Structures are given as C-alpha cells and as structure tokens.
Length: 432
Image (cartoon, rainbow, N blue to C red; front, top):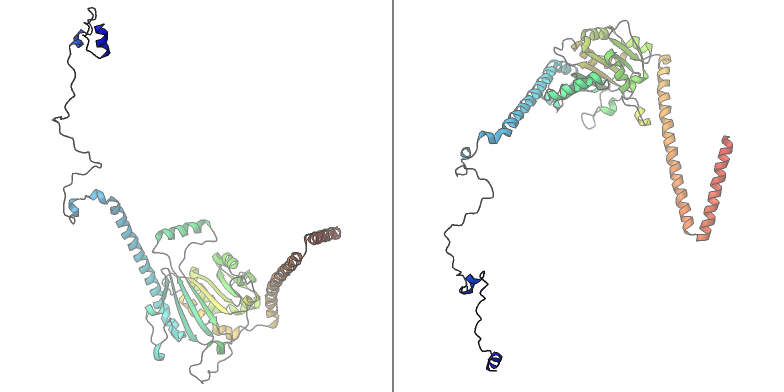
C-alpha cells in the first residue's frame, strides 16, 4: 500500500537491473551523457584565394606610351597586308590619272594652235583684250572625269561653237579595263574600251541674229552672208562601227548604206541621196580619210536627232557635224582630217544646195516619220480624253445613285445591267 501511494506522488523507484542475457547493450549501460561540442574551432588551413576569371598574360606593366614593350609583330598581321595594298591602289590611281592628263595635254598641245587659227576663243576662258596669244594647255582642257576631258571653241563664221570630248582608258583602274575588254569580246553591244576624240560642230544655219549677242547697247550687228544650206544626213563610217551606229542613231537609220569606189575598202557611205554623196565626197575628204587609216571612225553631217523622236517638238531639224577618230599619237595622220572637219561648215554653206528633185525624197521621208509621231500623239490624246470622259460619267453616276433610295438604286442597276447586256449581244451579232 505504501508503494502504491509513492507511485502516485512521483516518488523515485529503484531502477531495475539489466537482464543478464542482454550483452549487446552492456557497453552503453554505464556510458556518460553526451555534452554539446564547443563552437570555437581552431583553423589550421588557410583559405585559398579566388580563382581569376580571365587569363592574364605575363607581360610586365609598362607606361602607357611604351607600346613596343606590350606588343609584337604578330599583333599587326592584318595591317601588314592592308596598308601595302592601299598604297598600291593609290599609286596605280595616281599613275593612271597622271598618264591620262599627259595624254590629254599632248593632244591639246598639237591641236590647240589649229583651233587658235580658226576660232576667236579656244577653251572656257574668254581672251582678255582681244589677245591672240595661245592659251595655256591647262586652261584649254577641263577634266570632267579621270578618263574624260572636254574643251570648247567659238568665234568663227558659219559655226556657232564646237564641243570636243576626249575619252581615255581607265588607267587608274586596271581591273575595270580588263573587265570591259573581256565583256567586249563576247557582247557586241558593249564594245571594248577605246580612246577616241568626239567633236561636234553646231552651225548657225542663218540664225546668227538669234545666237550672237550685241557687243554694246544700241550697237548694230555686223552684216554676215547667208549661212543656210539644205538639211540632209550624210556619213562616212568605218565598217566595224556601221551596224552599231545604225542601231544607236536615229538619223543614220534614215539612210541607205553603199560602198564607194573612191573610198578605202574598210569604209562605207551612209547617205539619203546619190547626188548628196557625189557632192560631199571631195578629193580633200577622200585623201584625209586615207591618211587617217584605221584611226578614222566616222564623219557625220546631219540635221536629225540622234535619239528616236517621241514628240513633234523633237523633230525640228538642228544641223551639226560630228567627227570621231581614235586617239593614237602621233597625230600627224589625223590632223588633215581634223582641219577638214573645222572647215567643212564653209563648204556646206557654199555647196550644200541640191536640186528640188533630190530634196523631195528626203522631205518625204521626214514627213512620214512626222506623220507616225503625230498619229501616236493623237491616239494618246484620244485615250486621255476617253479616260477623262469615263471618269466624269462615273462621278455623275455615283452622284445620282447617292440621291436614290435602295429600291430606286436596285431598279437603276438592273436597267444598267440589261443595257450593257444588250450592247454586248449587239456587238457579237455585228462581228458574226
């Protein structure tokens, strides 16, 4: 009874002795209670440093301006290829442009005295005080492009002015020369590059009063002889250029091509009349063409446009003379032809007057071309008027429909549809 009361009030009871047969836990029976470990830990190993994020070369640090101590030749391999290439390109460009400039100056040195004898002004600078001294070569020519030079001459009877264009090789770009040459071997419409002189003389044709200005206020112009002549198309062309010039020039497409026994076999005549051919082929011209040889390309006297006219205003005749020769020094062989070209306007004014029978066919050809252009213009105007009328009808119809009710619009559209149907059936009946 006393043990039961002690158990109720938490009295300590004696621990029972371990069982004799439980030998596996005998070592833990008398083991002391575990104690918490101390928080103080003595570190004997040093913490490793943070690994670098990038590889750094072992080049020693130097001043900012000591580039040679931080770099090697391997760092400039790309520049070692690019910089010499740039210098080569610049050297070729400078050499080519200088060579073209010398070629143009050489031409001007030979031909400028001839121009000075024929014209009052040679080049783009007006002579001061009526001086007749030869202008400087550099002032005579004007460089339009690295491969193109131009000059100008004016102040002569029967000639308003003459334009000269020198086309040279693109020596500043050998790759372009090679490419154009290769293309010219396979494509007929793109000939190989060739150095040439192209001269165009614009004649007065009796219009001196409209072109030549007065020298002073109230001063009358000097009386000049009549400088008019009949309009026609005549050309002597190298056979290698005959087909291309006929295809590219509208004025030469009006002519007929025939060989002439007095001319070299490698040239041909393109003319509108046999009478014009016989009068234009003078002994001086034939000899000049023979002296020029293969350097000669074309001599054209024309009053028609080069491009095909599309409007009536473009069919108005403008008389001019064209000369084309190859630039191949020395110029002794082409100089007689050049002189003949400069004096050809005088020959035309005095001799280019033909019989009415010969000019009748030429005028008929002109009128046929004008009638074709006029017909095209009339058709275009009629089409424009038709389009404008249809537009007005549509606007009037839309305005009328906007004022109708839905029922009235339906009736109107049904009547319109039936009307169009009857019209189409009537057209089919008429065609049948």
